[in-house]
Length: 283
Figure 1 (cartoon, rainbow, N blue to C red):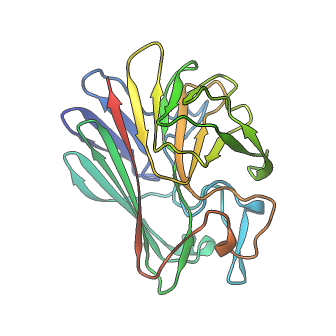
Figure 2 (tube, rainbow, N blue to C red):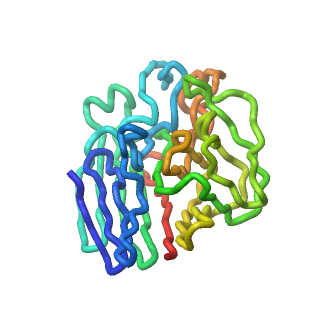
């Protein structure tokens, strides 16, 4: 089921399954900014990544001496969320732990996602609630896909000299880092940019990245504040994912406990943490 909201400038669509953003459409121009999820290319549109980013080594981790198995990108993206609040211009969804999730991730949690249309675009706030009497370890990430064409470009808000990490065919991080071909702050989207999979960036200065084209004047400005940023698409596909990450894939240095995983966050008992990204559209 897809739930909708709108304001004077935009309409919004969000799927019940995974609370996945399916549409952000301009009323002024009729332009759709979110990838349509064509299954012949890539079925996703904007999956939510929790409580891990990417893949675990052997899809397993240990916590307090017990081994657990968890699939790539975690446990919430392929399960339904419940719509708990709807206004004219916003939708709020919640997913909580259940018997199935506890077998993979032994914590009680609540994950709330608010989608709120603004005059200029969309604000998305994810709130993680630790409903345990002890520390909860987790990562969080967003994965929205925006329509574009080969030849469009991404413009960072600051001039950058970037190195990217890479994953191998098993989606595990390798040790080597690679330079990113960027002209000060412009990263061109070419058919081969993602032939070795995602760019996994850290150490950047920018807090915004804009999707632009030399063929039109529309701009999608993506504002974020995450320590890592994934940029990805299927090679030669007509979309690009801009992914703020608070966490990252495993490497081959297997940790003895989830608490030691790179990028893992700790949330104290009964506390909440929020993560926001937002889009400003100029037409």
